Image (cartoon, rainbow, N blue to C red; front, side, top):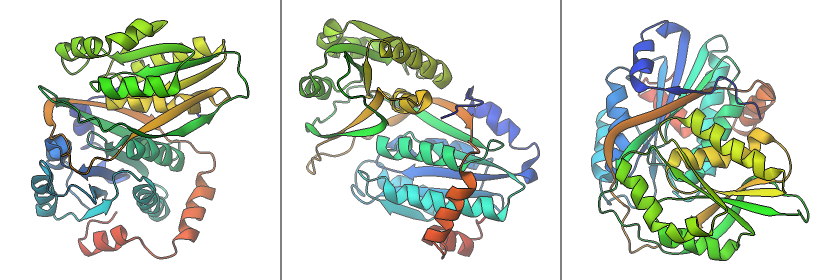
Length: 358
């Protein structure tokens, strides 16, 4: 898959650009009302300059579970007070939100074929299955003239302990393995959950191990914590490296370089974990190369209904990047979505009633 016009973005520069040629662009903004305090941080910053309008459509998703946990009630109140409906989807299932976004985006492309389109996704509080799948879906649907923006709000994890409930299952996110490769190299992303990382290591039992982590991160002491918590895995690794959380193109390039080097030996299996920008970068690497022998795996946590979600506060740092859409198969995909859903989605209907349609 082509990754064209991939570049880092700052929120300030993008907001400044919204006043230029505003009428010639249509925007779809996708946000989450979750149990983390930072769920609404990006939206509060952006909505002052980019309110719902005839040219800007907001889609807010909420989880069907944990509605009373953490900051979920306050986040719900913020979006409802702004006149936005909250569509609810299971947090461990991405098909519902992807289908809704596909129908909404296809409608925008159909109604305004001559306008450039921007899609903005705040993935700070999204499950990985959501934001990784939404990136792939929007990137495929958008034309080369359109732009996809991904935004991530850094979090404060002081004293936060992840309530590990074990590993539920391991699924192939993208890529195709080869049959009987000479060597298999597993590339692990590391975060704060050392118990989970060790469990994945024992289950997969890598032949060759490479590890990476975020540095520079949100704070320097977080890097020290990750290295300390995962010292056993780092000691077992043939190689480890750091990638910047704040510069997605640079991080993606570094991960891709390591994948390219080790793919000369045999298969490469990426197992993303840690900060969301690095999870996204390593999840997408197989599609960038587009050949057999490079895959990414997603490991789900076993659900613990007794635990509460971590109410992560915003650090104040916002990291973004943008990428052009791909033109191939776009018309066929739009027709497929439209024919599968002849009537408007519930979101489009409610948006029309609220006069927030494109």
